[in-house]
Image 1 (tube, rainbow, N blue to C red):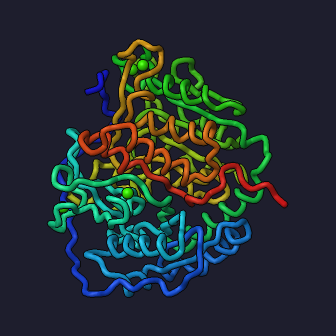
Image 2: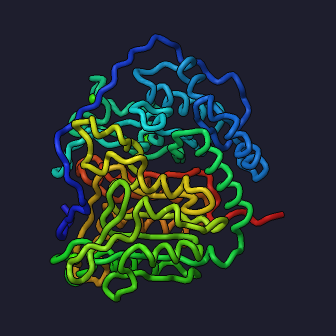
Image 3: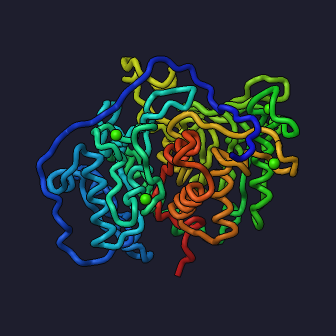
Length: 457
Ligand SMILES: [Ca+2]
Ligand SMILES: [Ca+2]
Ligand SMILES: [Ca+2]
Ligand SMILES: [Ca+2]
């Protein structure tokens, strides 16, 4: 077993109760093959009611060489078998890979407004990480289509109709297709994100603002972490050192360049290709600590309307808990299994940034549950263990490394090749925390997004 330094919980949540989640909508349909031998690069899955807002995105993608097709959930539910809607969608994705040779799957839909139901359901994982046993969403379910070669991976290896249950189900986890989700709750949000993607991909290339990167953090866990007492800053230092060619701006609590929300809003408005944050997160805000142990809140949903970075949309990577928890709703006030009081909000901050009109993010990497990381430098090599030994910060590091060192240009490839490498490097089948991180780190965005935009013809 590898030597492990202190593992710390990067949580900041008051939790209560426990949840369970199992589906058993038995259906009696036969999975029909797609009767069309054309090839596509991307399929967008959405409810019929979003289709007219999606059409401009399909036209745009086709213009730029990403051959794209729409499949509605209504069509999938009528054509495909499955024990529940998520499984029906997954069988369709398998078919789309085999018949159309697709690379990218864009799930266009989240909750229906504030209602408990979903336009595109999530798969809930049952895994008690020692801190919380509340089931969490995993879009990795839709990326991990195969096990043992070409066998369908249903995430229910013991066949008891309870999906993704740690200890009872063994999951392949290795992704087979690049998935992203834009958890739109209303048609107007579809129009906003479609307009932003088209604007980003057609206007960002070669712009000076894109070559700026903002990193921010503080003392994530006061009292531990030596020789890197400010863990968030240490992870940001390490990752930003890799970003050759980028102009790095550091907002750190330790030197007073990060004291609240004003600094990040200002950097956001100037425009930057990437924002990397390492610290604590709640559903609607992020928070870390200064050297005196006082909390610092770099961003909250309530400040997002102040963002004015139109045309200079960032990719926000938040190394913290629950900023991509796309099942929040004010109605969670009535849910005894809610994930702390911050589960009762209109929307999660990752999505709030992406759906912000005329500003905010173009894509977001965040978590759907609590995250964990390593602290300190047990092997005394001067490299923070958090970017060496796995869990949260390793995933954040690898995402950027693949862009800078391996030349991946589409965000879905950066995200899912990170997950593939994680599965190759760590104990995802025997260590529940390794498994949980592959399941919960989520891409809120178009997986075919061309990072930095297309060179215009
Ligand atoms: Ca099972
Ligand atoms: Ca797989
Ligand atoms: Ca610390
Ligand atoms: Ca080390």
